[in-house]
Amino acid sequence: MVHPVIEELKQELGDLADKAKLLKIATERIKQIPPLTLTEVLKVLAVGELTHSPNEWRRQSIDYHLDHFNEHMLDAHSKEDYIDKDSGLPSIAHAICRLIFVAEIMIEKQRG
Image (cartoon, rainbow, N blue to C red; front, side, top):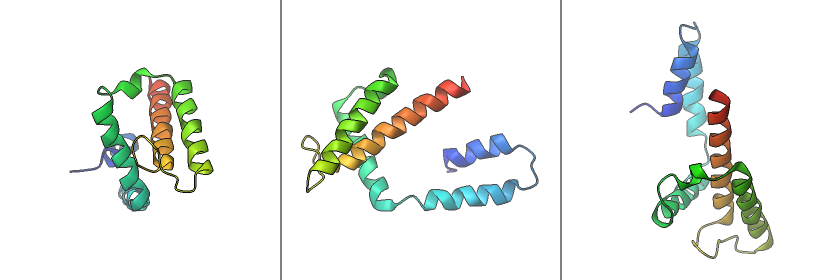
């Protein structure tokens, strides 16, 4: 299965001569996402699916997500163990999820 980012790049690049090169670069960048962080972010998303209704995050405002981002960052910075008390997962992973949600909402708005 082709990663959605690669599919999107294929569509955006169209007939560019450097398409293969750009797709190769994009594939390599995906592999460079730090695996420990990505794993913890995926765990946070999985817990979120168990504790919230599907796509609930899409119904929240950007400000709502940024407020929760700030709370998780403060929590991550102020504790020695950096662990969210509710989930038992790193607070920083929760903060990253909030930024991913904000980015997705903003990109969706930009693209219409």
